[in-house]
Length: 386
Image (cartoon, rainbow, N blue to C red; front, side):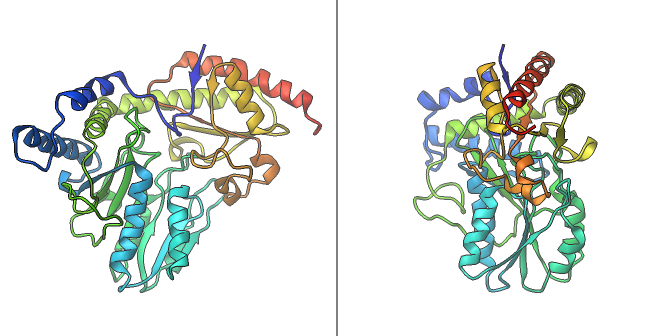
């Protein structure tokens, strides 16, 4: 049997998505900029997809820019805001538990003269809201806080952050990386006072190579790349038509009977957590429990065992998991997220992340709970640490 439990890294593409994409490789190949019939059809397709996807977060299609994924969307959001607003100020606030696709951008901006403050988090990964209030100055132009941690599942209090920013005397733009939360946790840009949201298709059973930045009308943002004209004012180049169509179909599937899909993931998440804690001693849960945790995420450290060893043993039994955040799994140093929440290196190295999707089944969880205790016990027997 096989169990794919690394949906935080990427997801299998749904069959309906592939079917929707196929005609756009060989039959509907028009360029959306041009006014002949194939081009007009392509233009209408882009507009339809934009509306479908943007509406899921309470935005309009005209506020959406397609990108190659959430990494590019984060880059466009953070660097684009910094470029466009540097005359207003050069101060940015983010957190220590952001995805590397945000942290590497802020590190680059620091090298270019911007001041960046990184919010501390507590032992469950929640940002310090009082620290946020203290850090805001008249020079602050952007706050970027991840919606849900791709590694430990913590859902940050974006609504509270939005209220803090709204109550300030000057306009501060608010961005979230929602790649790990989109189609798993409801997002309402108005309710959260969000100005920019980054999302990706391959996290929700869509194709790789397509994502989006949704930026509210009137937000002052500059392109980070220049080149051939496209339908977008922010991103040059010919639109990825098969990817856009696949993204739209993946969104339609994800949001159809949305609540039941989320309930399904929560049920599997809780079953996995209960089984791990019942069957395996010396485990440490990373992140919160209950409603403040992503319905898709489970992350435990197994003491006296290396996470890489567990991963390889599970892989030999057909179970796919991850040892850290999706963008840092080949690194030898402890996860920056686990370090930020105070996990000691020896414990952090034993961390395994399970990420679920609506396609997972109870049988897969049962199989995992059958194999995982055996693997951990065997590895502990071989461990020199007793």
